[in-house]
Amino acid sequence: MPKRKIKVLIVDDSASVRQTLKQVLESDPDIEVIATAADPFAAAACMAQEAPDVITLDVEMPRMDGLTFLDKIMRQHPLPVVMCSSLAGAGTETALSALERGAVDVIEKPRVGAAKFLEESRIRIGDAIKSAAQAHLRPARPPAGLPQPKPKLTADVILPKPNSQAMIQTTEKVVAVGASTGGTEALRVFLENLPADAPGIVIVQHMPEKFTAHFAKRIDELCKISVKEAEDNDSVLRGHALIAPGNKHMLLKRSGARYYVEIRDGPLVSRHRPSVDVLFRSAARYAGKNSVGVIMTGMGDDGAKGMLEMKEAGAYTIAQDEASCVVFGMPNEAIKLGAANRVLALNSIAGEVVRLCL
Image (tube, rainbow, N blue to C red):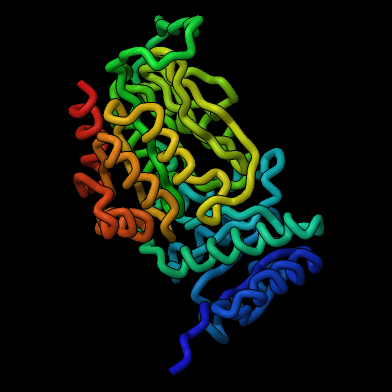
């Protein structure tokens, strides 16, 4: 019996974007575009005829904007929604709001470009749709009433770069975290539960370019620790979390007792850039037993092999459990490889990380 295809409804006011996105999606044999719509009113009419498995939704549209339609979908007939954004200017902030309101993922609008860009776009968009089709929808986060974090530590001690490049003895712990679909909310929960003097954290969240800086800024406002988009040569410090910039790989490096990050271009690794495998393998090499690895919700296997390398290098590794995942792909692959020392619910991960790094 042939495998059932994932049925997708495309909602975008641009005819060229609808056509390009349709071509990109239909190049994947597992995906079927059942309809396209120029606005939410036309989309509602399409949905009355045939229910899609996944909706791609433009952020800015006439007559009704994407957020308003997303709210209606989540209240009236919850379905996996992937926001399709230019991710420029206010569009990025709107996309972040969409994730808080229940959208599963955000993709960058496909555009005409070099063959390499179009091929990578096809992989990323196709994976986002497949991941969304597997997602366990969860209640949206309320926009108000969030607790106010305590003031952040300001007296951070930055170790100078030593003259010798030799690896000197250090017991400072580093936490490497990887996540994909559902990861923006999972990371919020994890980071909000950390104390102000938490160990240094390096994070790869599968995100489009230009999205990570806004995401880091928003999370920073909610947490006791400081959160920022990583820049090349940033030091990894207590009370700080660095998030890999979209469309760039991030590696953990060490010079003497100083941990820092290196930001690189390069091909997709495990179908992603940034790749969790790239981060985890660098943590295994440069931090070894002084590192803790955490793999969270997401589709696919990015990070599974890298986490195994961390464990084999002496790191302690944690996988998020199925019940608290939006998509139990990446953690499940790590568990199947024997890469996880422990499997924990999302709400328990921060406490375990702090305990391990005392």
